[in-house]
Length: 296
Image (cartoon, rainbow, N blue to C red; front, side, top):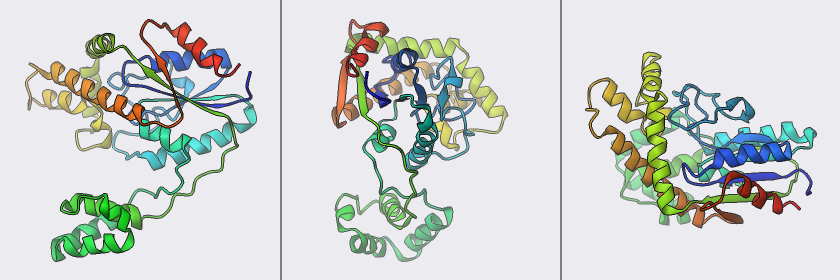
């Protein structure tokens, strides 16, 4: 068996990531860390597909739906948690469907900047409104010609976001110990996966997804909050305030789920150092065995 390792488990929604991660953690006596952007929000449990054992995970259910959370926030918190766990001499399993989070952590992204302050964003927007887009484009070209080439220079939002990233304060990333690293991606059978996603949405509705959104609404949260970018929450909210009919709502959520899964699979194809595990015909036990073979 290898020494304590950092293990990433990624895959599209409804591919069995959680089951694999928890079974593997049992086998290895490993820590578990959440790398799903929306499972970080408390009270958003049913619609984000959280584990039935959320207490096992770090970085799960610790934010209000109104709080922003991005890749930089995740990497800082994840690295700090890894550093805190260093003395336990146990492996760490990082699992989630937000591919950028896993990539930034495992590929050691170090040039990220902190989220822009509202003041910086307001100042750039005011410059655009008063002086037009051309001065901002020239500033971007001057500061970072390569970034400018990759930016839609006719889109004010894209130009302003690029400048925000350039002018933000560099993140100070906690030091973490060197550990062997492994990344696994789950590749489900297309037909079986389609049914699994549809069944998953139906099960979420049966498990009280509408009631969950109702509770969030009563607590003052809604579509303008970052947490409500998660699939389905805005649609259900609109239904609750009678701005949308129930007919077709579930089918729309299923469609968005399929579209999101396609983007996740596209991301997987570009992921460096990824070991792909074919889920078709494999139970959780078989997948755990496949992963453990990498450590023998």
